[in-house]
Length: 442
Image (cartoon, rainbow, N blue to C red; front, side):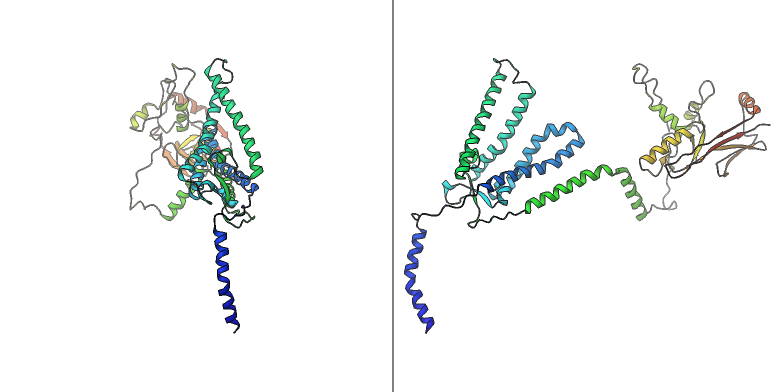
């Protein structure tokens, strides 16, 4: 019984409800004006500017590390590129910039209908006026200042062009001030370009929410922190050390074939053909010692590396006209690869390798890695010469019949000599050793 009464009352009210809906839907019925949020529009502009700055800053720092002049030269083009990309994926696609999206706003053209989106042609004009015109203005202003347009004579065309540019900037500033006052009054057009194109920022939803979504801002903050961390970390990484570690790791995972499986050619360094009584490091240092102050003798003072084509040619360089080798070994030290160098030369190269983070220094004769060195000792036992290292391991014996000496060497050996050299060398963790030379002739 009660349900039938309610049904009859609903049916009786239907004509009255239909008439109310028609009145509300008629164009003549006055509609309430939507709430205008001026702060949201200004915040959207600030968010867009901050987003461009966040994206440009890490790229500008990267360009400054490569070349300091590139940052100042290409910073306007970089800003132009970032603004065009942001405009393409924000205003062109959805009708609102990223800052306007965060504030719940979007562009509309009231003259073409209720909450209608701008046309493509209107968006192209809007993008050109908001992005391209300021870029060309900044470039023209910088060009004028670099070529001293303000200091040109009054009759010069450059001075007149500078006066016209200054007048346009002054007029633009005055109109911007008037437009901002009008915007604070009615809240319709935020910039002169928006007023010229009749584009307004309006709420994208009928129900306006005052909460702000920080989704885009959080993404940019994470990206900004990540780029700052990379810029801090990259200078601390030694790429050569990382490459060596990766190489050693891959070599341990994928070992090289055994000698029975693959016959490896002997390694040869840059100075493998240099006679053994000469220091290869001294030869390399001399080849790089070019007197650039004397243009005529620069090429003459350049000592090239000994060719690796034949040992006979290298033997010709064993001694000069006076019988002395061009690069004699002083204070000889025996490297772990078996070749002899000067103590100072070997210490300098191994210290340099230790500073670079290397595990060793590459020998100039055999291209092997030198990780240690011992003092080289020459002893005489029963008319035989024996070369040995500090540990006493015998390397080579030379008999009386195999050794020919000149008169000068015989006279020097008859006198008898005894020299002791002591030195410590290392990378801060240990001692390399010392050198002792003892010789006597009967």
